[in-house]
Image 1 (cartoon, one colour):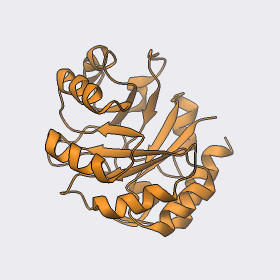
Image 2 (cartoon, rainbow, N blue to C red; image 1 turned 90 degrees about the vertical axis):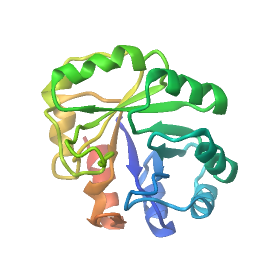
Image 3 (cartoon, rainbow, N blue to C red; image 1 turned 135 degrees about the vertical axis):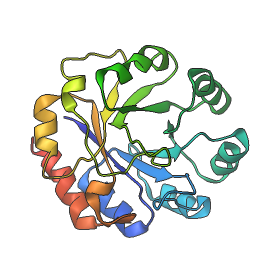
Length: 211
């Protein structure tokens, strides 16, 4: 079965529904400019609610060591997601310094964007493919999809997640086209930008589980 990651959780109600519904990965956003940003102290409380087997993922955008150390000193995370323009050497540094599995996001708009995969796959534990935005301040959660055909029949030596504009209405089509190890959703389970909807969370997860 395809695993599920719900990203941008900020409150206990949404987290509870996400866990009850069967998501394996919970994304906590530590990018202060995001509408889904969660304060480290609140994130610590949320992380304590997660049962064994649910992986708490911290999403960062081009973080420096000071910010990473601050957050990780407060929040017990299982994985780090790098969603900025971090070069491979920086990804390797972070993995070595903090000794946590790394998810590296790669934005896609055309096949040529896959050229970065060969370098990142050497240093990351997971790949995450998201929609590339012309707006350089967007780092995921835009609600827009990319052409899934870019990834059709592609095989990778590391597990990977499909992200970008997924919701309960299109995830079945996505999974009939591609075979990712996990799907990642944020805006597709929100009532408004940055506000998670527990009913949409449950619907999305159930839709994936029924496939």
